[in-house]
Length: 227
Image 1 (cartoon, rainbow, N blue to C red):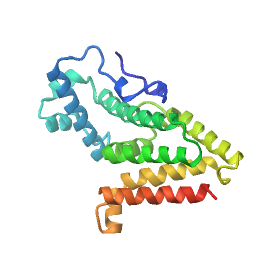
Image 2: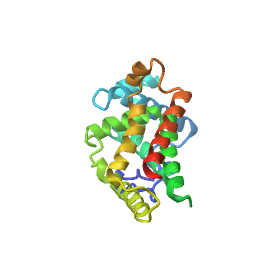
Image 3: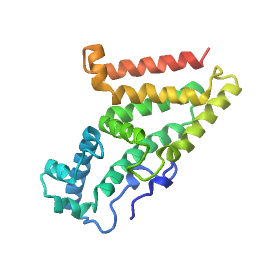
Image 4: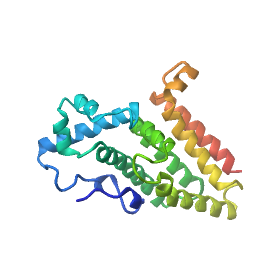
């Protein structure tokens, strides 16, 4: 199975289970195990040092293998980076798809989606930093326009808010700015955790502090939307 082109990713087209190694990869248990170790170490390195600050030698050393062994699984740093990022998007879109498919309406739907975002970033904090780096770089390392990939989801969410506002369920706001505010409220807390540690004199990413911030964000948006 070939890798899923990032330009074709949508919530209905991809899930985490669909991201599979190309057919020319070895498929025995040892190969899959090594491949997963490479992906895990790559995620850590890309999150900490960024794309330009990470080399294949760094990743190979972290896994405990030689560079030629890494190249047996991934032909280039670009291919490895693309695989790691596809997994991020696949996981994110799968969780969003579950939340969006739920029959809940009004605030209950918004709460489901916000909670899905919090759970994703709490489970995979390295993904958050990697995603923020890629957003700042404009998707240049992926060879795609990341905003264009995610635009259909953004437009669908905006349309949902507008429809709920038109129906009198939510108070009137600019739906697009509302979404951008929510994006920042969730993503920035995780991506800037080291900075926030110094502001609160504690670790921002403890379960207790994450839950406290989640509850605050939910309360803030509920107050903004519901009379």
